[in-house]
Amino acid sequence: MALAEIINRFIWDKPLESLPLWRAWIILNLRMIYAVLRDLTQGQLSLQAMSLVYTTLLSLVPLLAVSFSVLKGFGVHNEFEPLLLNFLEPLGEKSVEITQQLIVFVENIDVKVLGGLGLAVLIYTVISLIHKIEIVLNLIWHVDHPRAFLQRFSDYFSVILIGPVLVFSAIGSTASLMESLFVQELVAIQPVGLLINSTEQLLPYLFIIGAFAFVYLFLPNTRVHFRSAFIGAVVAGVLWQGIGWGFAGFIVSSSQYAAIYSGFAILVIFMLWLYLAWLILLVGSSIAFYHQHPEYLSTREYEVHISNRMKERLAFLSMYIISKQHFYGGDFWTEERLAKQLVVPTNILKNVLALLEKSGLLIRAGEDLNIYLLARAPETILIKELLDLVRMAEENRYFNLQQLSSSENSVEQLLEEIDTTLEEALKGRSLKALVCADSSDSVKILDFPTALAQ
Image (cartoon, rainbow, N blue to C red; front, side, top):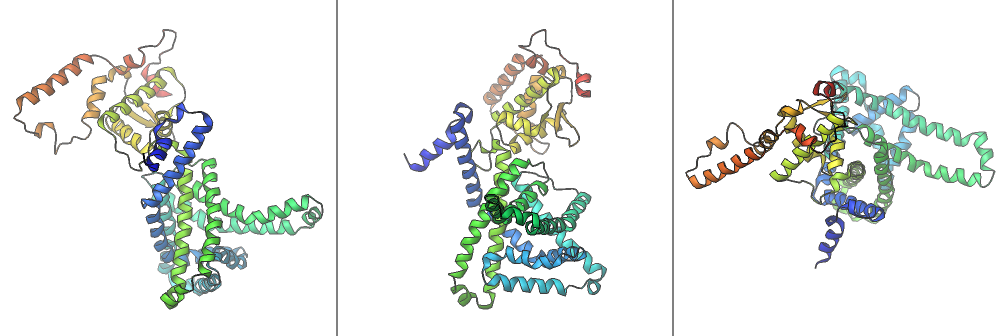
């Protein structure tokens, strides 16, 4: 047996529920590493990083110009160049040249010369960059709807206008605190001084991790748990420092780039670093996603296509679970809770739930419309109706069973016998009968209007 097959069996073949806790934790993390590497090698992350490089080249100067203008209003624009220089530090000696050139571009932008239309184009370019980042992160988080147009402007402007001020305020406050007399007196006391100095050395890394965590929490148009965002940010921060050091060494030892690309060498190197920077951010977001949604680690494939039998089972299980909550109370079921309960990727379950909702069996409620409730009284939902609904889900008025001509009488007769047998076996059986089949009389059964009002 090949080594790859042995590794695949070790990671994927056994359900985690049957394993000891320590072994399940190890396998879950191995699955996460596998999933991220799969997304990298199959192009999902690398292609998106390339597209962000192109968008960044178009939007970088307008973004810096807007941020610089905001910081200038608060009198902290002098700290802008050191921060930009720190971001480009892996470029080695070229970082100073690129930073100075970007600062020249930013300072040469004159709002009076631009006029109203030019200013609108400038702001639109900046918003387009953030919107593109949101689209890419939504793809990682399997979110199929971006922010609404008006919400987009309000949220993005808060990042553009308030974000830089908060970042520089945090950096400035930290620097002032470290230089204060009280802290200097503490530094003289050992081992407190050693602890403070070590913390000071770690501050740049903490700021980087904080920046990544903010992006993961805010930009995807879905609720991201802080713990998942923090874990993804820590991994991204470690990658940022490690790859930054490696890239700086690569630049120092790659003098042939200047010989090959001549004056374009600095642009090529800059684009390479932008690509790696975006790739690091996307890898961290992918880790945060898989940490929050471990159900996506139940299969080794990125895109999973399920059989009709699986669709039937998911539909019945979903209706059964939601009906139990309807009858017996308890926490409401959301898409995320159902996916975790059934250990199935959310995007697969989403299609089944959408079918049930479109057919009038489920409705969505709650502030974010993320709670699923029965749309009809359970005694009126027949098992045969639910089965037919799933079986005929892909049929439409352009091509259906009636349009499929067949002269094979024996086949038609067999299929009719199967349908007749199913109808007789499920005749009169409702969803209520299925849920309450093994319930005791002591359990309080809620009527439909009361449960729906909850």
